Length: 416
Ligand code: SF4
Image (spheres, rainbow, N blue to C red):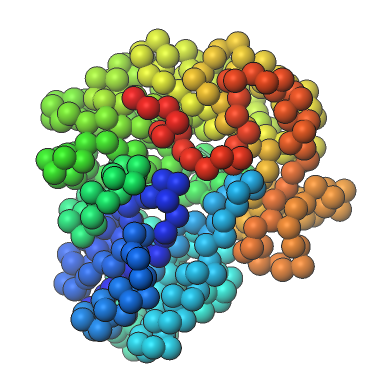
């Protein structure tokens, strides 16, 4: 089949290259399909560019990535689906071809988002293998379900089609490149769409060749796109060892969780060009080992010469203010480079935290957004700590920042 993959993401704080589409393009080509990518991020006339691509390429089907359905943060929130819906309606009415959606955002409510966007099919979860299975079904004569659940079963690092993306534009606009070492996360954070998802690691040398491909073209600044880098300590150490042996001259930033670390890993990360760790921390029902791990990971990172920015989510149902105060004291004591505090929890329909909130009438007063729409596709948040109270508790300490008030990401705030 001829497939046109479309990146509709025009959010530029910072702009993010469509790495997911590059992986899917590689997977499709490996199975004998023809693929083109049209990237609308910097387009001055998106519909004209889209029409030109559809007329010139005459695809059999289009695939659109839904990276996020909104910016997830309460302040300065931007909802992306209405613009994607316009694009899908345009493709279907003017060009008469069917549209598949995929991407992490779809996991929030696969059926609901597929209907909201008027898409024909959705692949929920990793789409590298899922889209192949879906196209096989479409080409065959079997029943086609609207929502297809993708599973990443291959350890192959597909030779992704980074040549189909104009990385110069992304770098000029403050963006950087990305790569991933695995899919999935074994942690069970009640507020996260990637919780308890199947973990599959990619073959290390293939990932390093991907990085080399971009670094050789002069794009040597990366952010890891894994849910969290340290899913498995042995794999992380093996990956950094191989990267060190490759002698690639890159700088990169990672997401990590408070688990699975040691000094050896941090030394290797420093040696291979890591300059920044964004550490995911939340206050939802934790044991004492969790606090010890936060302390350990921040101390180890700092003593290895790595900067560390904490993304801290708090203000969960039934949580007392003392819990927030304990975490603020912890961060003041161990002094990471910054702490972004988020007290607004985005409620997606598929999340355990959403069920907890919706099943207790006493919690409903803390909900911000329209609950009449049961799909929860348009932004709905849970918030029990006001901005004014949070500012009081922070007390002007520059270590802390209220998340979402200003657009931006840690790697552009903390430069190497
Ligand atoms: S550790 Fe990170 S990626 Fe994994 S479930 Fe928790 S928040 Fe999500």
